[in-house]
Image (cartoon, rainbow, N blue to C red; front, side, top):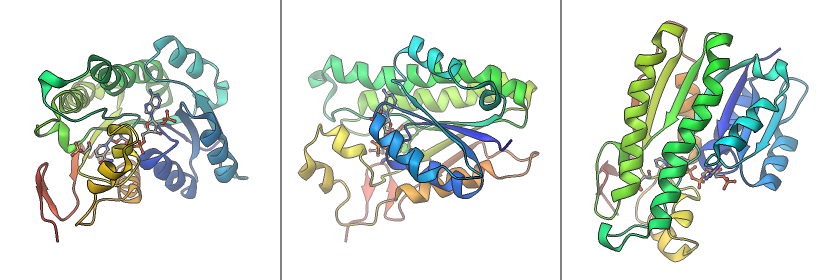
Length: 252
Ligand code: NDP
Ligand code: 8X3
């Protein structure tokens, strides 16, 4: 049976593009996210004779649901998962810390940090048992730097960066590769979520320069996943050419 890649946040942006590129390369897929209709559409588009697609409609913030979803997978799927892409994540709001909303903070911490931990905890026993395994955590330039108004989002992505390093140390004896990917500005649904549906503000984030595209990140994820067994890419920062640092953007 073909190897499976398990992708969280597969209904949009990086996760969806990653699902497509792995399917093109003959991997079967386990796709997790909350929007069921999008999951089913993707399943219909990517399933083929060579590519099996399992969908898990699940909120990564709820540990019991994550465990139930993973347990519900057929044995032959669980026993062939080799790659976990911890991609589900979001920013909610952008502004000074003293004006921050507790609910926004909790959504970011619960999704980006606790959700990544819950999914990893559920999946690591299978990755250990299956061999030739890899965890790819999607962090951010916000996990390398801190910028004005980014406070809690930056803190969650610094936590992802730290967890990637910690996982690499704790899992080396099982031969599990751990890769941290830190993208800069990429035009996905990220900003529309961050600005709570305000499309004018969201669109302005990507104006005046060429941002990264979801396909750029998917190709990067495929590159790190397709290195030979003895090679691990530990940490990779990928930026739009016009973005020299988190807040240094060369606009035309
Ligand atoms: P999108 O908003 O396009 O995609 C986010 C994905 O995460 C969606 O599939 C969404 O699915 C899923 N998701 C969000 N919350 C949950 C949840 N509670 N449970 C399960 N799935 C969830 O954004 P991107 O593709 O840009 O973001 C992907 C990752 O990349 C995130 O971790 C983000 O922080 C990071 N990143 C993004 C950058 C950018 O500029 N775009 C740059 C650097 C990092 P659904 O709503 O269906 O659950
Ligand atoms: C998303 C990129 O620069 O908005 O992680 O933090 S940024």
